[in-house]
Length: 154
Image 1 (tube, rainbow, N blue to C red):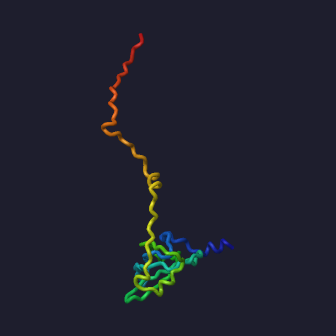
Image 2 (cartoon, rainbow, N blue to C red):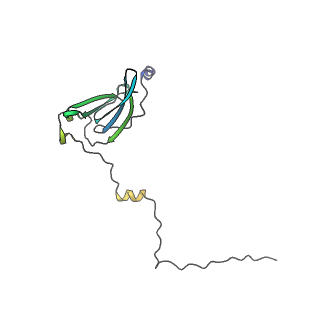
Image 3 (cartoon, helix red, strand yellow):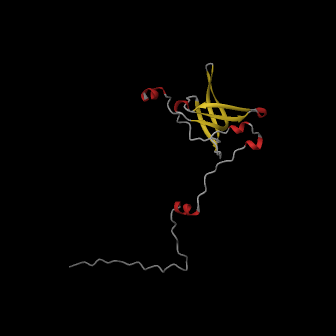
């Protein structure tokens, strides 16, 4: 039975990096109209991630003209996704951000998740050791060059 499921599943889209709810993303989709093909960009915040193999998807919400919210759901394994960029990481404490639907303006903002700062001890451990040069007063007098003469044995 597992072989049948694997035969039906779509291949994983390698163009999609790691993402989380609250991230600001830019999804570039291939749109086919008649016999023409073009790329359409959809920028917004991920409000939902659903995992589940072939049915895995994510929902992106953005504000369109006049403050109207637009949500679009994309399949994670879709071949129509041309490019995917994480513009900004968001710091959120929930998996589903449905509360953003009722929010407007400053209350709808999400804090940016910045990389953790290293402590002084971990920075010192990561830094290569520096060679300490003695100052002019501490410098020992240079030793005279010694010549080694080879004695010939007769």
